Structures are given as structure tokens and as C-alpha cells.
Image (cartoon, rainbow, N blue to C red; front, side):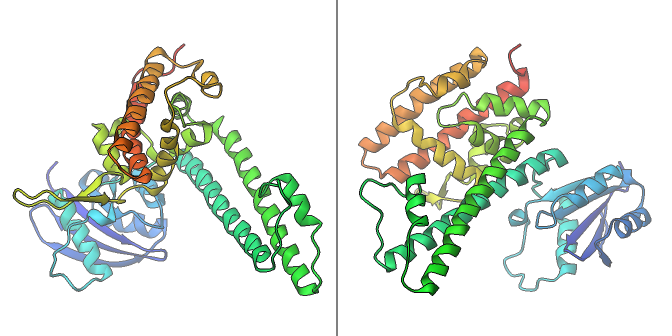
Length: 371
């Protein structure tokens, strides 16, 4: 369409700096407006019809509310990966106005990389899964505080009592200190540990309830991913919510790069130099895949835990899962025999596991669940 106008928005909690790039023309600043739906709607209405406008802004803490608002207005909008916005090496001045102009200019040139935007239901489930992860980290901190208190005062659990079991917690509840201040500290730390456990239980129950109401395509992917060894219900939910539509990746290597699990490379001429993984991707995805990869240390087998998860799967999905077991276990053994350390081996296995996750996701999105 002729006379398309490209709008760049630098979005903050309370304000939005806007700039516009005309087709083949100048780039000019539009000023700063309040970050309110009515202000955004008023500005874009002045700039032209929805068919004439293309809008972009960087992904950030303000989320996707603005994207959903513009989409409802019929305006084409892209949410841009901030780290991939082109920037001159000599540019040492950064302001909201310049950021908006840079976005508008780069959008017109086609130099921006958009991120995948989930719908509201998908985003809600992802927030819930991430809330559980935050609760698990808080639980670890609470346990560490309590265990270090016991260590400082020479208190050790009886022989044969494993940490953080019910027997261990009962031992803590019957512990006494001579000083009232220490007793109060112990009570507070123990209450926090118990509170964290209850919090995690509530969130896991909420996840189980929420998964029953997810859209059918997302539910099908969650169910199919559980055919893989090391990917139980919670891991499958995390993978599906972090990845979204797997068929948006044209090749599994794109998914591997998205996870940040590919090695860095600095090569020039005949010299090839590779280093540690880039970590320039989704950290939640990378964490859960590396955790799942540890299951492939063991020889291929359909275990008692895995068999029920594969019972209702299609033959194609089961074939991919079995191929993953054989290939990844062989990969683990081969790299270990070459003298690689275990963390490096598991990271390499996790990178290949993403390829099988992609294959299952694409298979299910294409053909659906078996009848």
C-alpha cells in the first residue's frame, strides 16, 4: 500500500515518546504522550487510517497491553527484541526521542526483529508458571537461612534424618534454644519455610486447574511433550508456555538459538574460535531443558513413570520420543568418553533435545492429537 507511515514508540510506565517515518521521506518526532489507551488512540487517529500505519515498540516491563490495544484497532503492530535494534557504534547519546526515531527509521528499513506475542490466556498461564518458579527460589532462600542458623550454633539433625523431610521438620519444631532471641529467630525462619511450602502447593494446584481450560492446540502440545523422557507434566507446561507456537521456528536450529544454548563464535579467516553458550535467549526455557537433559544419562527404556504418559500418544510422537532416547543417550556417552565435563555434556544434550521438542510440537500442531 502507498503512503504507509511507520511509527516508533518508546514506551514507559507513564509516558510514550513517539516518532514517525514517512515512506521515502523524513523521520520526525511527535512528542511525548501519557501512556493511556485514550491518548494512544487519539495520536494514531491523527496520523492516518489503520491501514496506513505500522507501529512498533520494544519488548519490556510494560508487557503486551499496548500491542493488544493496537491490534483491536486494526493497526499492524510489532513488539521488537530490544537487543536486536540496530545502533551505531559511535552513538553515545540516548534519549526517549532518539529511541523512538531509531525505531521508526529501522521499522521502515525492515531491520527489526519482532518477538512472538502470546494471547491473553497464554500469557496468564505463563505468568502462573513463572510465579511458581519464583516461589521455589524463595523456598530455597528460606531453607538456606534456616540451615545456616543451625550450622552457626552447632545443631545437627539425628543420624538417618534427611534434610527437609517431615521427620526433619518435626525435629526442628521440637528444638529449643536457651536465649529467647534465638528461639524467636528459629520460629520466624521455620514459619517462612512452612509458608513457602504451602505457597508452592497452592500454585501447583492452580496450574493443574488452569491447564484444564487452555485452548485445545496448546493442550495438545502439553500432552504430547510428556512422551519425552525427563519431561513430566510441569516441565511440559513450562516448555509450551515459554515456546508458544513451535511451527513459527522454520528449523530446529532457530529454536536452539532462541534458547541461548548454542556456542559463541568469533571466527575470522581460517581461524575458528568457539566458546561457551551465548545465553542470549529465553532463560526459563534453557533452565527447564537442561534439567530434562539429565534424564538421558541412563540407557533407553520405557520406565514405569514414562509408560502412562505415552499410552494415549500417536505412533509418530512415540517414535520421535524413542529416537530421542537412543540418540541423546549415545551423544551423552560419546561426549563423556571424549573427556568433556558433565555440565558441558548435559548442555550439548539439552541443545539436541530442543530439536526433538520442535519435532513433536510441529507434528502435533500439524496433525493434532490421535482420535
